[in-house]
Amino acid sequence: MSDPSDMGPVRPPASASAALARAETRTRLLVTAVALGGFVLFLALTGPDNGWSWERVWRVQGERSWPALFGKALLVTLAVSSGALVLSLVFGFAGGLLRLSPRPIPSQLGAIYVEVVRGTPLLVQLFIAVYCVGYSLGIDDHPVLVGTATLGLFAGAYVTEIVRGAVQSIDPGQTEAALSQGMTRWQVLRRVVFPQAVRRMLPPLTGEFVSLVKDSSLLSVIGVVEISKRAGEARAETYRTYEVYLPLALLYLLITFPLSRWARRLELRFAGP
View 1 (cartoon, one colour):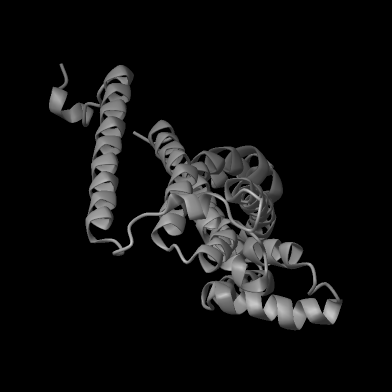
View 2 (cartoon, helix red, strand yellow):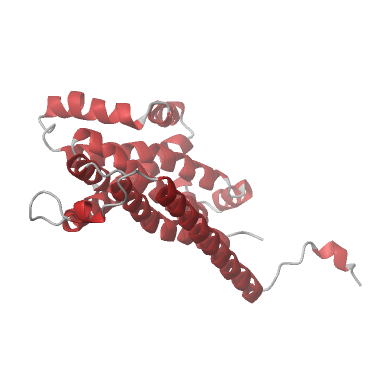
């Protein structure tokens, strides 16, 4: 009869893991709510001498309601982030295939793409995309298009490494076994490696989308009217800093927190033994 100690670590049942995840979520929500409440209270006690003035922020630019304008800017943020996500997947999977190529030239091209894009700030890339590339192509007056493409190219470099790492994490013995059965390398990737690697890509890809939403705020410097740009305009018109940027921070949190929790759930769901 075998020793129970030789059977490896005992994993908790799925119901216990789900209950533990729910308890962890409730605890984080409580801690986040307490932290945000304490921060707002601190600002209320140490804020400007003339007090809070939400009325001035609520309606600016004549009869136009600032929340309505803010809602339109939110749609721009979500559209830009979603478009950049699609482009990042295209660039990332293409770059990942280049990095995984056994031939030196494609592999080096993929490595150059990753090093150049990840080694330069996104802000600098945006300026180059608008004032150099965009101007040469005659599309510098379309900041949303240029900004979305640049953001997708930037995130694609990180997706490239996610793809490369996920594929290389698969046991090489499976590739060797498939090749010994007469499959080509492309068939091995498509039928054996990628189905397993995609499961490992999902959590970091979800986290990358969270980063895309936050990075989209930099598009305001090239004229894209997203929520950060709209908040800056409202602050310039009302001279109310607290009343403008606190809701902005809360809005970003409302967007990114569910995505972060989704990434955590995917990580727990697809975690290996």
